[in-house]
Length: 280
Ligand code: NDP
Image 1: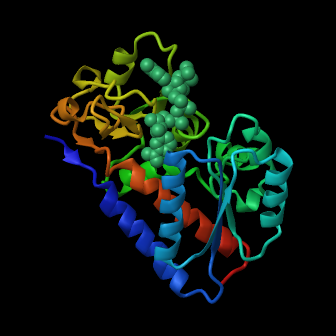
Image 2: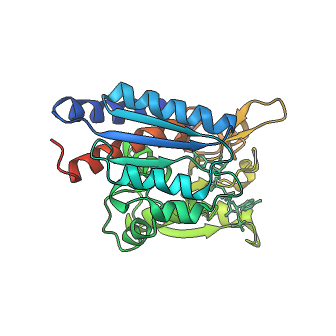
């Protein structure tokens, strides 16, 4: 039976680090979360982010805009937040309604306040290894590996998924830690074979329980980023936890693995943005 990597406990440790740093500051870090429309899952994420801000002692604002908000209205708000000293981090909850262009909105956020690290300037900085912020989910995965004492250097690391939010930056971070990295996607010829070479397997595809025990090299570390609903409507990952847990050396559960780390790393990024802005 694999070691179960406890994302809840590790994320609590990260949030406590942020809370302690914040306690020492006279001007508190501030996060603005913007949500457009009524997507129920997005509303839950936004509520959780605001709650996490309160717990670490941040100032926070939630801007709930109606579904029919125009691009101009949204960009005006982003602009206002860019020049608001109370606000150090701006997060526009994705996905946006179809009539709004995500790229235009991301590009409008000041790179100094882009705590999601989605702005091209921050993406470029990650490529050259000279960054201020890391995207929250891949950064959370790296912290899970570190806290579990799993060395990346020299290991065969396989990332399944190549999105801009998870897969691509994840591959880059593993490479920066001297892993030998393979990136797989929907056109990969033999996914089982590729995955079976992984000492560290990170899966971010959005397909419930696709990765079974036959994909796993015995003793491998398996990190499951996926968040899906199974046939009974229960939250589950991209990895079939029940079958993989006996083959893997270490594994993250869903829920309670990568998910809680994403918000914890968002708090860390907001603190960093505030410190960079000169708040003490
Ligand atoms: P995207 O849909 O943007 O990307 C999915 C990627 O998986 C694509 O690169 C796609 O390949 C690849 N893929 C899809 N099906 C297969 C397959 N059968 N075999 C191999 N590769 C495949 O998803 P995201 O990266 O945004 O999210 C992935 C998952 O992670 C989702 O379940 C999401 O909910 C979850 N997530 C969880 C977070 C957390 O905090 N825990 C945060 C963010 C995401 P191609 O490029 O060829 O289409």
